Image (cartoon, rainbow, N blue to C red):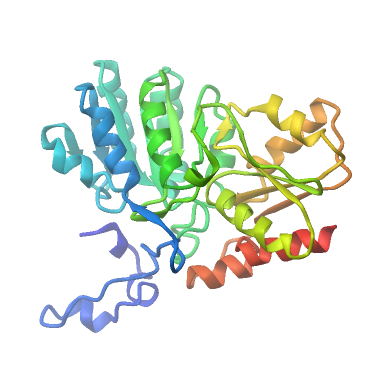
Length: 351
């Protein structure tokens, strides 16, 4: 049984009538809420970048193994499983057990890539990750789908506070890549990195945008994708894509927007952030697909405060500190202010 079906909300929220679920003679409808694509019409994309990158990374690395909690298909780890079936472990709906099994594998010299949904990793297995993996400094890579508001299934599956939960954990590297290029390169980088990593994933068809900006992922480094005189947007994850789109929208209003992509949340590239935020008297806006509490915005604010940098304006584009609604992603993104159009309206209103 797929994890999509677990819980009493499945029939109502997944768009699958209860009768179709219980009557095997009727076709089983697919749901758009769980696997909704972030690719807009006409946008370039790449399919399953994480799965394909992990296959490449594992080609000359027999120590790399894949482990999932009944979510191989929904985290693109099934691509790895098809290529290396003897190195693929289906652990069932038992995330806590899976994390400790990954710790055991790491103790034996393997490099487990563990996949589940971000809500399950952050809320359900925190103590097991902390004491079983990170405190021991084990080489486990925890790669999680459905970060922030990337599903319409409501609070049970929307990991709006995962970065806040994990940022306080010592010695855990946190990565929030933007697009297919970023995910592929980040997968190779964390495979080469020694130590525990938590990485957010976009799955399925993933937009491809950063190849237009001569971009290359570097663990622990932020990258200035475009410069601008009026506003500096510091962003991570899919919000970097939205920031680039909003910057183009704001050009028609003669607002010049710089975009600084920070795919590594921890350790944060404070040197680059402080330098760019202190240059030119620009407003600073932090954009993230995460709660306004405890994520990149507060990390950046703390870095600026510690380094004595006070921009003329500091604002956040982020999810509100509430349990979010269920529904269609485009509607929810506009409602909660993280669509490109909503972001452009906010920035224009703040200036």
